[in-house]
Amino acid sequence: MLALLNISNFALISELRVEFGRGLNLLTGETGSGKSIIVDALGVLIGDRFPSELVRAGASHASVEGLFTLGAHPQVEAILEEAGVGSRTGSGDVELVVRRELSAEGRGRVFVNNRLATLSLLKNLRPMLVDIHGQGTQQTLFDPETHLELLDAFADIAERREQVANAYRRWSALNRELEALRRDEAEKFHLTDALRFQVSELEAARLSAGEDEQLEAERRRLANLEKLTELCSDAYNTTYEESDSTVARLKRLERQADELSQYEASFKGYTEGIGTARVVLEDLSASLRDFLDGLTFSPERLAEIESRLAEITRLKRKYGGTIESALEHFERSRERLRQLEHTDERAEEVTRELAAARTAYVEVAARLHKARVKSAGEFRRAVESSLKEVAMEHARFEARVAAPEDVSSEEAARQFTAAGFDRVEFYFSANAGEPLRPLAKVASGGEASRMMLVLKTSASPARFPRTIVFDEVDAGIGGRVSEAVGLKLKALSGTNQVLCVTHQAQIARFADTHILVDKHERAGRTEVGVRPLDRRRQVEEIARMLTGAEITEAARRHAREMLKTA
Image (cartoon, rainbow, N blue to C red):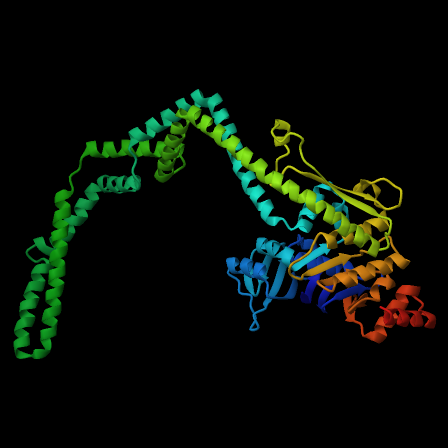
């Protein structure tokens, strides 16, 4: 569950700390008090878009931080382990501290348990942490494209879905390969000529990695031969060749130091040092002599190097900028040429594989279709039962699953997806005697709010408790219907933590944790604040929700009675 939410410099919030409890958490307050800002911040925390416009005016950055305590949760642990993030407390439960930061310039960072993380990690964790439903979600629920996902969530057929997805990926990949082979066949002669020329050109060039650097070094030596000869000769003469060379002087000095050491032992160490220096210089002079012997100027060799470097430069420009990229192009082109020369055989092979892959896909998709048809009846009963609980006693519901009539046809193949070949659409009738019609065409505002609650709670039987958020689920309803929705939320909170923004006293009465959100002015700036309500203050808030700005004693009595019977 979400235990704690810290919000800093977010929209109208400067600093806010909200503690949530188990069960049903209600956020109430006057219209425009900032309740939805808190829900928006929670959405940002779990991966929603975080635009820089949400950074409070004048602040350098905004942040949202949440503490989640989940108990033992293998799915979350597996995701965190793969990301290299620790999660366990001393008791063996999973505990997560998630934080998102955004600078006023738009630079964002994500942290999970104080370790820098990625936004994709948050989005992977989101389904196990928080499920937010607001006005926008209500519209998507009535989109037929979402109906298949809702039915599958209820049916709990993830394993079958994965089998279909794997079969679809195989079939789709072979389809793409066959299309590419057919394109290749159409362009075969043009491509083959071009590739043969490139392969021949690179093969004849016999490039080798690092060759250009070696040739450049040799060219520098040849181009500077006169200077190199002069420098080497001077160095050789100085160290060895001249009668008064450094080596000759060191030999004399070495003998003198040796004689001195016979009379004064302290000079013995110097004799060894001078001898070492002499040996080093003799080695240097030998290297200089060998280098000089190898310095022969060859105009032909220089011209050869210049020509080779020009050819290498031309090929590098043509094939990627480096010898390595040219060699890679050579290997790719040679392999591509081989493929083109065997296009016909591969096309026949892929055609056979594609037919087998299609058969395999249809088999697993057909099994998935049967599972959906079976679950559709169970889903209908679950939804209709829940509709009665929210004061829609005469409502009827149906999840219709349609598959192609002939799965072997090309028209059917255009309907193949990673989720199977079914089309799912929900049908609904709110009143007795009225025919079932597509849900999107018949649900009114109040019915839509209740249908959203029913569909989401029916289609989401979570194995592990999570936090479910409803932002103004009470839109368009009141009175007895509001009380029915409140009871439904209360029942849902028995297995999940529920956060709900509401304007209805009939719903607020069921709160396990009641939080008042208000907007006030401080130091000339608008601020959003929260207050957890004890029983006395809860009576005042529910009385306000019943009567408006002026709270009467009768409203207080009514509020106390509502709380007593909740």
